[in-house]
Length: 397
Image (cartoon, rainbow, N blue to C red; front, side, top):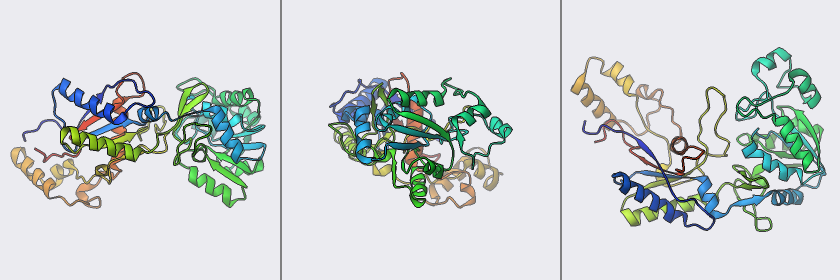
């Protein structure tokens, strides 16, 4: 065994991106300069990731709360709008809510409990058990919720999202009514114009509402699908995947990510002669075991990726082979036997006994999560990630 290092993931620094910057050139320049500075080569089947954020910044894909309000006004005639199932996040929803609140005279804000869809909790499961409230059927007013559970502060941020969201609506000049329910049909008691703000269960929520008589059902993915007065937009995701830019504007998910990754791949090949795979990544798909919050607040881990990242891994468990098929071998004989079986493995083997435990998740979800963990979300300054050896295995030289 000549090689001693497997997969390596490096965060790569780059200039601060501004609207109009040539993102393909910046990504290629940054990775090539990093490889020269650190003394390693760019190889075929390397993976280069760039955050959705820097692509959206280069595109200038921003929108004001006024643009959000105008688009909703153009699509909703009812003066009372039920806004249901938002996640509890200042970054992800508070600025969006400002725009929503400016669009209507009254906002019915229906919140999930005990937590939102990504695990941000209003109350604990123990509190829920002690209250006798049935979260599957009970619809609570704000007064009833406070009676059962008192004030509710987020375990990490210390923010009471109920008060925060209510205040945002009222500051925009709209009347706010807060209710708590987990069945989307409960919103029909308040309005037949509904904006579903959930991220991953959005299509199901809209289907249930339409099947039960809602006159107008929109999702965040239906808002800002086209430019409003020169604003940014996203035809596929709308406001899904957006986050706070300023107090009065949001950055949207990037557009045309697939064409961008293909352009970056072509530029790498032209400049290095290597076939590099490229991915645009957002939130990683992993859950915090302590806070029980699912990181993925974006609609997808990877809004764009090159064809070499399609599919799922085909792997076998080394520990299974060592403990079962080759339990009587050790040392070089064991290494050779396992190496030989890996080289001869079938492409699709998830049902085989030696593949048990190798969950067949999409490569882009795994790679995107690795990129997100590598680059971080704060001040590391590495929005580009260079991964090497990802497609290698124990038999690779």
